[in-house]
Length: 132
Image 1 (cartoon, rainbow, N blue to C red):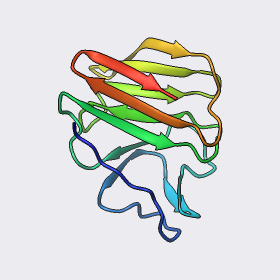
Image 2: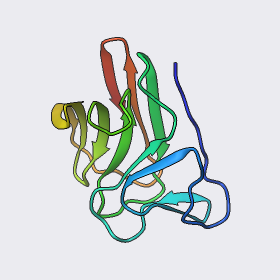
Image 3: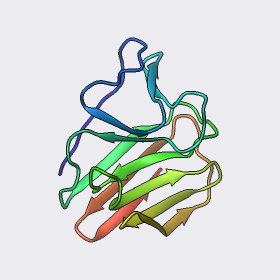
């Protein structure tokens, strides 16, 4: 299973390092945690290495909630036009299948994200799951 990890336990900076690509938004590391800043809106961050193998997962611990939607991306291509997204929009967790840049909800769990939640999106064969 493909995996990539980072605990962001390093000095405050807007440079996340070579392992990350900021697709949208301006991410930074603040107090040893990944932070989307105060701008809100859609924030997308992906691992720089390909995560498009058959079996993989993405997992993140939510330190604080903001007005931004946030979640994890797995078994996706590098331009975010194909893959799976497990995301919270402030009121519910939604599991999306993304095909040709079209996001289709394939599952929902009605609960707001809370600090300390661990979000995990997993793709193993044809089984796609979202965990909180």
